[in-house]
Image 1 (cartoon, rainbow, N blue to C red):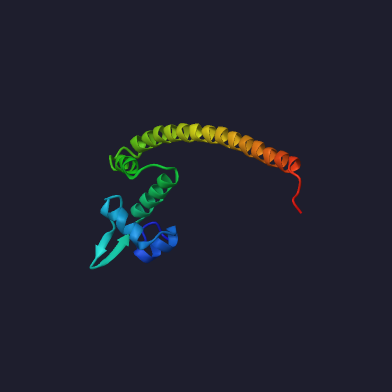
Image 2: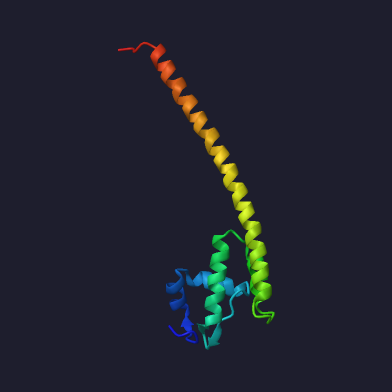
Length: 134
């Protein structure tokens, strides 16, 4: 596919594995702005790059407003430096949040494993102490 090639909504859906409804939603939120040819939406390379960034941001857990802020920095015309700096800052913040959540999950899993082990031991102890009624 050539960089300047335009894609239809169907092609975008297939390429990015999203629904047409998703693309229209991002359009209503002004995150994407495809060209119009009558009723037909035509997505440019810029739209493809933006959608890739949107999907990556969603995968990392960013809300749409944070994604919008990063995308808007790209339009400032400083060769993407502001966007890059903001992206790195936001990525570091999210990394720290996820690391904290991971640590909390590890602790919760450890406590849950201990509870399961205790419960299973208790069940076995009670079963051994209770004669079988046959």
